[in-house]
Length: 241
Image 1 (cartoon, rainbow, N blue to C red):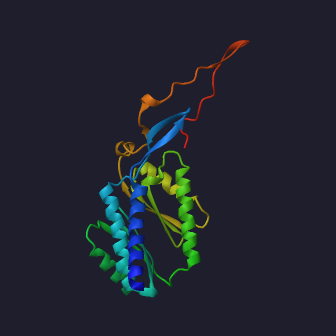
Image 2 (image 1 turned 90 degrees about the vertical axis):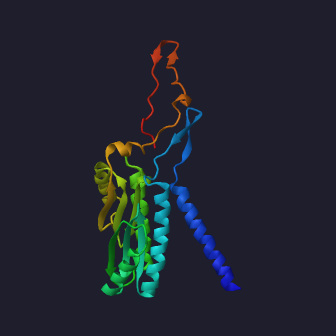
Image 3 (image 1 turned 120 degrees about the horizontal axis):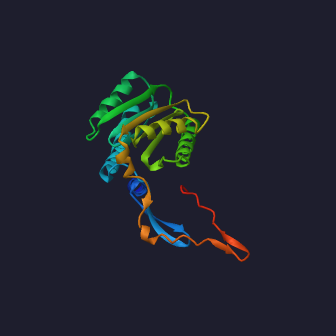
């Protein structure tokens, strides 16, 4: 009876993970309040197709499941997949275990390439992994705060204080993102760029833009003073985030 209950819980958690991943990555149309008028705007979204996003989620789950059978409690494999490019990080007991994980991952269909950064070392502590999660959050926050960078265009993965950046970006975005990531937290040991490069014209397709300019309110007329000429209103920041 208990095993049946556990199976139902695991299936529910699996569905929740899939649903949450797709929900966060789907293109969204969000309301923006401008001058008392709600205007629909298109936000910068994940630059992968919906099919690629779904495939990447499935790949990550398959890699995690197969690698855990190889490592058991003697190793830890963390996986990130972006547009069918797979990144493996974590710790393994020896070179043989690292090779076995690589070979098993290679059997999963749909993978373009594998970046195997597994290290031969004891399994990292909970404290180390918590620090990695904190670094990832700070890098994402720094990207959000940077003009001309859109966090949904990047996948940030941190392991043992090494930050990996994945995504479909221009060379300009890649250089800027690398600099931003390096300065996001003091405990970052290095930043590794694993980008798929696109040109500026393609990148422009993902830049947030006004969905319906007709709904933009007319600018307010300049304020007047009974005792003097009209006074211009202060201009609003053009790049509000």
